[in-house]
Length: 449
Ligand SMILES: [Mn+2]
Image (cartoon, rainbow, N blue to C red; front, side):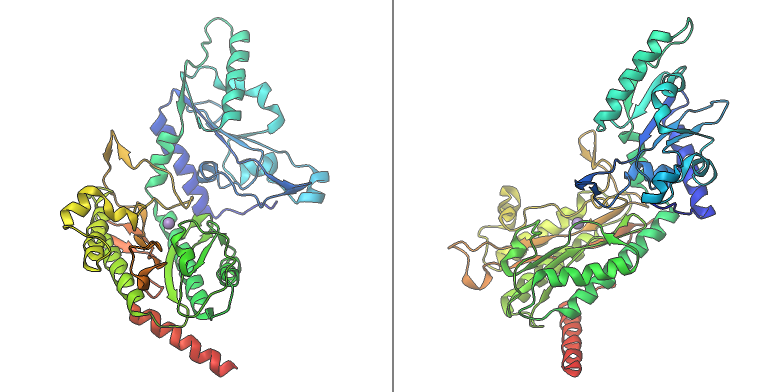
């Protein structure tokens, strides 16, 4: 445990977000936001702690055992933090915690209380509000809240009416998180740049007979050197392993003639990068590999070029699907007309996932994709991935040369007022760039030997 100092810019940003949330839910609503719990890996030994992104977004505090309470218009202050108090004995084992003083001085609480006073203090904090907004997905807090409401009802004097409704906090808060502020965009650019550096490093380390986990180690070395960590378990998939969409075993040996697909990203200051690239293990694409790669690349560029404000979220995906469907027909992997293939969805045998997801504090970030059943429109400040792919199975009806080829190309893209900005453009993507990078690193390895 350590106290992360917040810059004055960060402090101001967190205060602004809390104000905006209060405005969004209205002043008759009290807001409860719990910190993540520590999760035990085995005897006495926890997993590395990852703060809940909602709590982090509103406080910057990276500790378990905490609850943020926002009480609009409260005379003693709107922002209340319940935290673990400073305890010299625990500090000896786990390091310093913010404590009550830190909660006020560093994390912007108007009042701070010890977490073990929750049951005693919460009922009175809820009194006088019409609604409680809290994350419905958090079962433990839901149950606690019901018991606080019960306690409030029992001791409520004449005139004090307990809140009558519960509202899911996810809706207003995740709408806010979907549009990134200038501070967040700066952090996301860094996460993207470090993710890109890790991919370049992994690519220049590729050689045949190496294991997939060795490449995963190259990526992670870069993440940790920048005080980051993986934003999800890296996928390093040689040969046909690339056709397993969430391949995480990373245990096979890379063979000459194969491609290796790497899908990995850094989490830097809690913001995620997410990049996929495909590299030929011996440095050069074969003719069939090249044909499929060019097709996926054309689809990815078409999808990226479709991004702009007021365009439906689904438009980049539709653009990618059209290119891939036509390309699969041209390669002879599908039969019929383009309109047949689009109408029947037969392309889904080879391209079975969607093209984009939101990106932010979570790698699959929060926010609705549809509103009232229709795809929502892109807006400046949204960040999405663009990652079409083609995965060719080894069935009898597939020409041998194409069997087991799996290709996905993924970049992180910010929607801007004028169109888009690719945050992850610092990793080679064309076949020429890829083969040039790999021949440069092979030459270097020969010099080193
Ligand atoms: Mn992704």
